[in-house]
Amino acid sequence: MLDQTTPRGRILSAALQCAAGKSWADVTLLDIAEAAGLPIGDLRGQFNTKDDIIAGLLRAVDDEVLKRAPRRAEGQERRDVLFDILMTRFDVLGPHKAALKSIHASGPADVALARPFLSSMHWMLQAAGIDTGGVGGGVRVSGLAMVYASVFRVWLEDDDAGLARTMAALDRRLRRGERTVRNIEQVGSVLQRFATDAPGFLRSVLRGRPKPEPKPGPEAGSP
Image 1 (cartoon, rainbow, N blue to C red):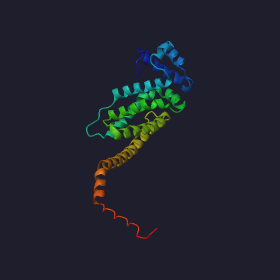
Image 2: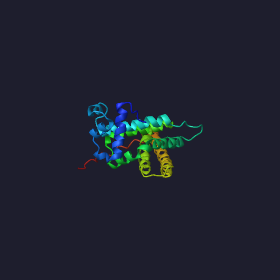
Image 3: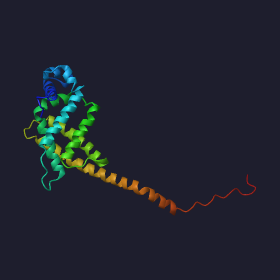
Image 4: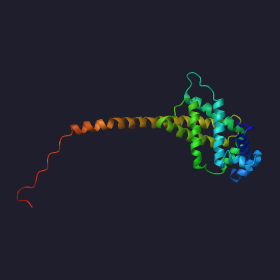
């Protein structure tokens, strides 16, 4: 997954090595540079922060998953293709589970990682032939991000060689997520139709509304 002949690949590999050896919270950029056998100035040429390194790892994992992504069989449900792709992702991550446990235990991810993480989910959906454009696509990307984050926690604690717990959790949550997204899309379709039709509808209502009768004026002699 990581090209050890490039400084970038050596840094990413060293970061995983350091995280597997001690708490990610205690790992410094200098630790990573030394583990990579590079001056810290060379690390700075690739990454500025540890979050940048995690974003680089996300991209490296994406590249490897897309390289291994299974072709969709004729008639195969897109959900089933997505299941296979995400299980491929867990296979790619498998050798680095100790490091990922350390990174996960170090605390909530920084908000700066939201964009690269959502980009990863975008590419997983694209690899499954699922559209990510427009509002509906954004809902799918966000929904998959929640599904994946939930199943990732299960995977971290799943020591079974066949990953039975992970597969069961992923299948269950993809099915639930598919229903949720479908319901959201249906609501969105209704709202979009209403937004399109509302001006004409309101004009027709107003045209058919009887004119209000004028209010009677004050009678003579009244104060």
